[in-house]
Image (cartoon, rainbow, N blue to C red; front, side, top):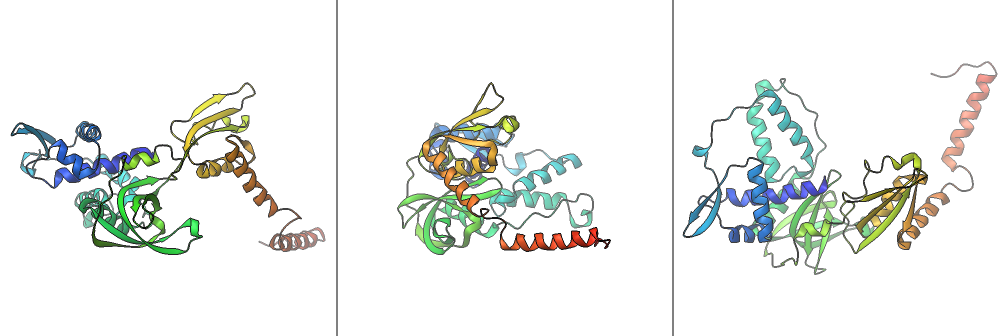
Length: 341
């Protein structure tokens, strides 16, 4: 799912570039506008065409130029109630990207399809408030190639805020949370920022100068969620009682599952670092065992010991008080008292 969303955002950037021109753009111009390789631009153009996007190609001065069909060239369109419902459900799925041009265009369309006097025809639950203002700034910065100054609360600093200047490269969504892949000017390196932790974002007058050595989405190619780091090959064993759920709760999309004779399963995958892999193992509780590498096994052991330490020596003070209270109530019931409602 996260990979498909990254592709969606990338293809939307291509669509924005096409929508900004009346006479079309060449592949070289689209490559420059989107920051993608020539082959990726070709591939994304085909994906958009196959999806039904009204893109036409014309030869001008010996070069193919690609553009959207103009309004007068498009056929008249009316949608059924089921089609409108499908668009609403797609909008719910895209909530993490609220504020971007892609979602704003969909909102504008839905507003026309569902005018105020017909609000009771279709009803959809309100979604949690996202960070539309932040995402709007980031998308504008990527389109105009400008730097952004952000106030960010980093987990590595235990939530302490700091102000850094970044050059946005890509918006990605993982498990419903939007992330920003950007070049950090102060650290002179690419970093991933969770949008929910960006308290403030301000567009600067400075022009972006960073040229990524690879496409930004490649940084997430081995990510469990959004973590990027040195690639590692991991091997995790799941007990027979939960092994059947391995395809449902995947570590990464391209994981391999080897079924064992005793009913257990061994999951093998290549991941970026072991931080998120550690969290995935811990989420299975006692039904999972990290086998390889040794660093992953040790990280899981340390976290389990830390958790166990909070429960050693009997119940904590709050739980102890609750148990005493429950004991007194049970005593009254045994003596003929009445149980409270």
